[in-house]
Length: 446
Ligand code: ATP
Image (cartoon, rainbow, N blue to C red):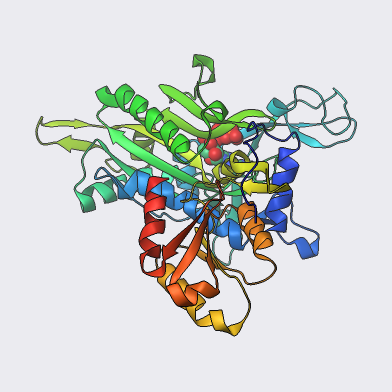
């Protein structure tokens, strides 16, 4: 059967890319509306069987680059619930606000800096005065709902790194320059959550605080800009859809010496994936002053005591996952038939391998399980025995599985299987004994 792709189409994005990706996410089990059977809970999403793999791979790939492959960064998993003192000192209680306005005509509420003076719902230009709306979720810890029991869900993971600075220094014997990395959930009571999982009230972040001698701040800021920009390119975001945007002086936070965003070309325009900032010594000094604890570093080689500067690359895991999906979505033709395909990097794909016995007959069952058992310790595998082989290939292309392994009746004789490549559709006969090594080599070369 002819399974070669038609001469490659210009990689233009379909005009309805967003609709297509959102519908694919639901149809194939990447992302579901949360509490859907109760009518849905706005701005919250559940990650289905494929989405959870993709999201996990995004986070693991980040961790691999930021922690595992380095000797100067260690990990942390700090609590989500935290006392007001943390957010008082960090400035979030006073300043973590968005300007909230009410439309005077339809009474909908909007974030003033996102609507260009026109109500997106009714078109009116009449609004109330903007007021500062704090984005932190407030709750009570324990059985008493009084002021003394107030706690907050963290709106970013970063503060966990600052308040554990001394714990980490003392237990790991790290010294600047070194970093603390964390991946986890954050919560913001966004006024207008929008664009699917781009802006939600509950989301996941991947953040790293890199502590350096103050004089080295600018140099490390530039280092991390390059590292982080390259990470997205290496994982397949095309160069034309990625850029670094430096903040102008009037856009900088009061504590920041320099900030740049990694931006992706979303269907609605350029928007932020990650912010990289030189936060100076603001955070450690603020927590030292508020807690009365010393948060600095004594350098025994120079006999100097100093408060390190912090370079922070702060990325969104869920938002980045969405960018990878948008960048990966393509449509082409194979054997005269249209197909949609996710050209996800093999490290990100929900499944690296799909194992497809050609027939449902029992005769292939034992060998199929043998192949699966060989692959499963190394790769996330799907197994599909329904429908024609052509249809099964399409289903795997659509969710981004880079390699399909087909087991046929010859396999019983020659102990070999066919490995089919998602992007080229080329097929290669591979001995079962070599299968893991062959796929591993392809992964490493991707
Ligand atoms: P924005 O300007 O889009 O509100 P921000 O500049 O406040 O974002 P940061 O505080 O720098 O964002 O957070 C770091 C990263 O966390 C962002 O680049 C983004 O990827 C992610 N992020 C922030 N808020 C959300 C959200 N509501 N939903 C999903 N991801 C988010």
